[in-house]
Each structure stands twice: as structure tokens, then as C-alpha cells.
Length: 436
Image (tube, rainbow, N blue to C red; front, top):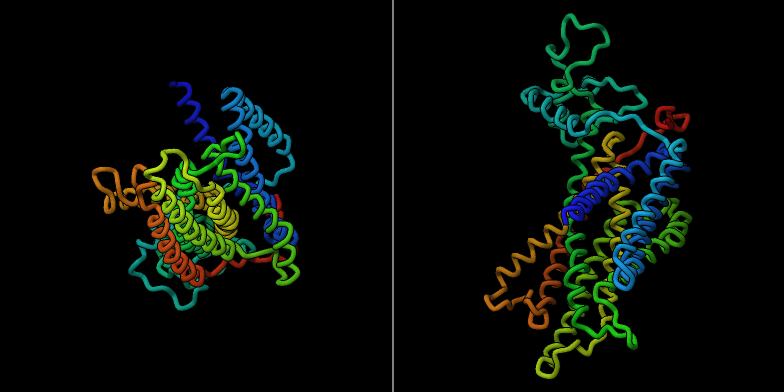
């Protein structure tokens, strides 16, 4: 067992590094200052998630069948061979990739701005922002913004910031004085936080598709002739919804939207909004479906202890709504956190995006514990009863629907407040450093 746990920890470590880096590295292959490449990057997010979802579909169908009907070691072997081929393909393209120079630790840069601003908290900002310190080349500078003005104090030039005997061109201590561009980079990261916070609720609703919805399926009629569909395999409909939505968006919606509006599809904030709406509808549909299932369960309590005479296909609408919502919100979040973050902080912003997934599951667990505490009883009854046929899971889904509506209103407020980053364009398209 020790070797198995070691292998699982190594896989978790590898996935953590891969997921936080691969999307940012992928967008590095596109030049945002080139209009043609920028348009191609909009398609990249859709196709990136499409292939991820294709792999997920293979995992919950083909690999599950192999490990159940053939042998578990064969399933692990196929995964190992697939990853080995992927590594070879990755190294084969090494010479074709664009690489961007590391700009140092983003966490250190953020703390430098905060510390410098705190140290100069008693100083007054100059009337003219041109008097603030700036040492970046003009082509790489980020224009000053009026939000979070307290951080601007990190760029106030004081007499003690420069040593008297220091050689010409020397850089001041960044813990005392930061450039306007460095301050604006920190502002960009801070502005991401409200959007980040209002997307956690989606993944809380998403968690129900992998837990309670599967438990619902286990009590329903799942037979197709003599074959009985495993309750856990219903997540295949969830993945299919993602693939269908991504394909329709990539091949139909985006081209039509480009001809109509002149933009390559919905903006990242619009996609996030669509995802939140679809997940809210999914929770509402789940509540109605569960109410129907409970009515059948109440009638059958004294008749049979087997599966309820109600088709499991009634769960498909909630799987499709939340699955389609994930297709929009995942690509929207990925696009938003990468394109609206500073160049040197893309990996950090991708990690910020991925943290919404994990926090969504934590919030889900927290809600479950709270609901069980206030509605449960010593004999295992309540909204989330040990046997869901005796519970009120529909009320729990209804609670999630209400919370999703409140969260969506909060998101609209945050999205309206947010000022998107406006990339600077150079006369020649892009610099040699950006093209690498």
C-alpha cells in the first residue's frame, strides 16, 4: 500500500504543476499585440478544454470498463503509455516553442509593493502622476490607473530612496521604492479577486453532480435491456454536455458572433456569466427532478425495496445544464485570469483560477455539514438523510439555487466594477523580446 500511496502523491504533485503551467505556457505561444494571433488565442481556450474533456470522457467510459471487466493494471498501463507518448511529443516540439524570460517571484514583487506603500503611508501623493517613479522602458510600461490609490504611494520618490554615492543608473531598493508599472501589476492582481470570489459558487454546485446526483441515480431505474448502467457512469452525460457545448461554441457561435459583432465570440466575463446562469438553472431543475423522485419514493415505501420505477434519464437535464455551464465558465475563467494578469504572473493567476475549484468543493462540504446540523436528527433524518428516499434533497438543491442567484447578482456588480486591461500596441506589432 505504501507504493500505491507514493504513486498517488506523485501524480497529485505532477498534476498540480502541470495544470498551473500548461495553460499559461500555451498562451505564451500567441502574441497579444498581433491581432491575428490574439484572435487565435480565443479559440485556444475552447480547444484546450475540449481535449481535456475528451480525455475525461475516455476515462469514465473506456478505462472504467477495462478496469472493471478486464483488469485494473491494464487501465493503469494505458494511462502510463499515454503519458509517456505525451512527454515525447512535448519534447519533440521544444525547439518550436516561444519562451519568455522569468521576471522573478510574483509573490515577492507583490509584497515589495505592499511594504513600500505601508512605509510611505503618511506621504502625500503628488498632484501629477508623472512625478511617480518609473524605470521601465516606455514600450513595456503599464499606464497609471485611479483604483487602489494607496498602493501608488510605493512609487513616491523620497530623498532616502537613492544613495548619495550610488553609481548612475543604479536601481533603488524595491522594498522602499517601486515603479508605477510594478504597482499597476499588483493592482491588476488585486482586481481579479472579486471575480475570483464570485466564481467559487459555480464549483459548489458542480460538486453536487459528482455526489448527490450519483446517489440519486443509484435509487432509480437504470436498465437498458439486460444491461444496467452504473450510477457513476452517468457523469458521461456531464462530459458529453461539455464537449457538445464547446464544439457548438467553436464552430457555430464564435464565427457567427465574429461576423455580427466583429469579436471572436463572447468576452471572458460574458462566458463566466453564462456559466453561472446555466449552473443556477441546473440546480433549479435538479430540485424539481428530486421532488418528482421523492414523490415516487413515498408511494413505493411500503411496496418494494428495489430501484424506484422512475427512469434515471430524468437526471440528464441537470447534468447537461451544469456541464454546459462548466464549458463556458472554465474557458471564461481561464481566459480572464491569464489575459488580465501581468506577463510575469500568469502561472500565479492560473493557480488562482484553479483554487476556485478546490474552494468550491470545500464550500460544498461546509454547506452539507451546516445543513445536516440544522435539519438533521439523531436517527439520520433531515434534508440530507442517510437514505435520500427519506430526506429532502430537493430543499438542499433549492438552497443552492437561491445562493447561486445571490452570487450571480454579486458577480454582475463585480463585473461592472471591473475595468478590463487594455493591452498596449506597438507600431511594429510586437517587440523582439515578446516574440522571443
